[in-house]
Length: 471
Image 1 (tube, helix red, strand yellow):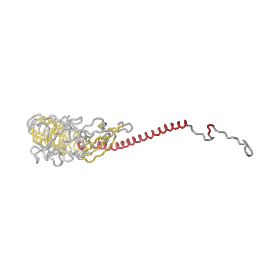
Image 2: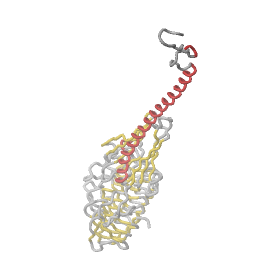
Image 3: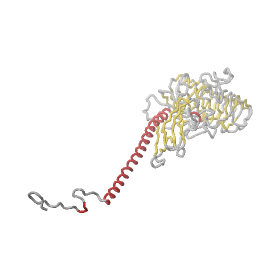
Image 4: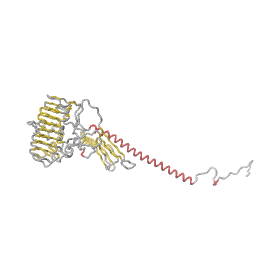
């Protein structure tokens, strides 16, 4: 086209589709493909956020539970380290996972599993020696697994036994997986006795046949007669020997005096500190399994009883079999004839029973005098006083605050209440379970055998010849 002016101007060409040049866009097909790809990418990103949130939630749960487990393990390690034995009872009386007897009359520490709906909790309670006065209660771990998946407790890799002092205690439990909904995460609380270097001043040997717990005065007082101990002797105070004493080893905190000091046939070692009560972990009646129901002082008994129960003064004048079980005696138990009590444990309490003897410095509870005849006594076969893998069982158990009397009987000396110290005066005594009188002085003036050993506040020998322990 010719225009006005000096030259020609070319005609601008049209683009295909009728659009002007530089204004090309996406087709509908391209937009649909792009939207589909964006949807896939958004779904992947969204799923990653969901997984990340679930993982963070689960990680937070695991972190909190593992932190609680560390705190709980510190409690457990301390209880295992300081325990003098496991108890069959628990603080407050409720069933517990495990209960530790604490030393020096510090009471007990119990671990409980509390299930509430789908969740569970492990808690710890500390109580006094009566098992009813709670001094502290601490929730330790809150975890997802409930009653259907309770914790499992092991001692030294196996079952836990009352009266033993395990070196390693493990509580294993399951956590609930918030993602899978399964109880598939396992925790283990472990408490162990720390290995210690040998004490150059000596350390009390385990399972001694004779242990006296009194920390002052004469733990063993031999004014005459002989005492033969098959095994070791541990004395938390002094030894006086004017008679004959034989053993494999004598360990004591205090000194030795008398005309015949030392232990014939054995070594003598000075202890740096006293021995703990080897039966301190056993519960007393009425908490112990197998104890009878009833209250003191109980009725007097001069004939064969109909069964276990609570009795006051008991006198045996004829030989007759007694029904097996635990007999609580709040007065004096006197034997004047031959008698064989098989499967019987004698528990000597105060007249306040079932309350324990309350004042350890002036308690004159039940005691015994095996005066004449042949006496055979074997412990119960079931319950807390029965024999176990490391225990001969308990044939005679005195309340831990029961002194029995305030003077010995030889035989003219009697206490103000007319009761003697617990005393073996006959010449033919055979007791296969342990004699446990941790606060009392036990007199040995006759003969016979206490093959289950003896744990007492102190021992006095004024004649005869007694054998303690099993060869």
